[in-house]
Image (cartoon, rainbow, N blue to C red; front, side):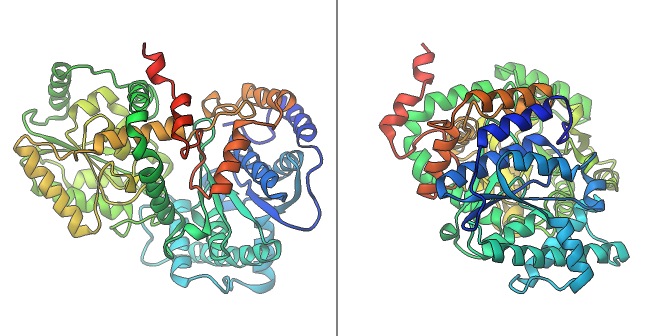
Length: 539
């Protein structure tokens, strides 16, 4: 991972950025707050570019938040150099750079751990819980918490008070952040939502993707992710689904191309072309796993067990409980096979061996198999799977696009778009599973009549329609090495902001209060038709 401040190109980047952004607003008045609490330079640069684009739209100055502490450094970072982050932020025109962890240390020393006055206590406790689970890389909290746990809770409460005071003083017109969970990021988001400040969530993938929750769009007092899920569903149904006939050729092209790079690593390509090939590979896979190839197979995709627990709607107390109870249910349903697949990055999220313990508990059952994801290629996995089961994983939008139904026990940002079967309660989850088992045994799929097309439209939206390319910003997949820094510096030396797609997309999103950046103007079907190329290129 390219750390901020590493490499010979970093100083050249700073020079190019200082010239490019020139003299930015620095006096009193409106500001845009950008978070820079990550060691990957690509993450910070995306936030700074988005924030500066909003500054241009709103005539605001840029304020950057940074910093870290011992626990976050131990859990996530190789090295976090606050001073180098400060230099980067100032080169991008920041009028002020604030070390949030330093402010929190001072708050604890001078005022103790009294939380923000306006924060909901239940929401604060959920934030404490999610943070502790992630920092300690455990499935759930112990019944008796030690002093280190209590100290972290105190720090989280102090964070809430610092954010409340700071945002009260700054009155930001927007918050731009790479993360929306845990204390150092999530409490900024929670405070912004309480103060009716728009929150822009930059994504660490693609050319440039970002979601935005505007205060007037909120339907209740849900979390950021919960409210955003509803907003994305509304946008999809109003702006994408009505144009499905127009978009369909492009969605089919994207689905065909996406088979080559869904997922992570060398096992992510899906190349099976015929049903005969699928049956042959399926039999081979079942033989490897010791499963009956003549039974339908349900694949349960385990989540990173300490990742952002409770930050969207979920019907179980935590991700560990979902896995345990799903395995208990599967143990009693012997008419189908069940493959439990662990998350590919679980070693960074769990130090307890939770997945292995669930596997041991159900050892000896001939219709159950447990495996790490890295041992199975996409070709094998999708040939085996008749129904996918997950909480909020990306398989819930990938599998339906290729005709494989998915049952979800929680929300992800696309859960309102009609791609999968989303359980509304635990009772509903068990009902969906039981009905799927019954239908699969009869040879009937539970894929909904529109789910495949909706999933392909979502795939197109995610990889094309809502992914904004700009010569200012290298694609995420270029990596974080010297080539990235060089390309970024070249862009700022030779590309002007006038008419730049990034700035045009940000202005359109901001003025129309839309929940995501768009490559196209979805309110202009005629313009959209001329911009789409699949039907022309297919010939």
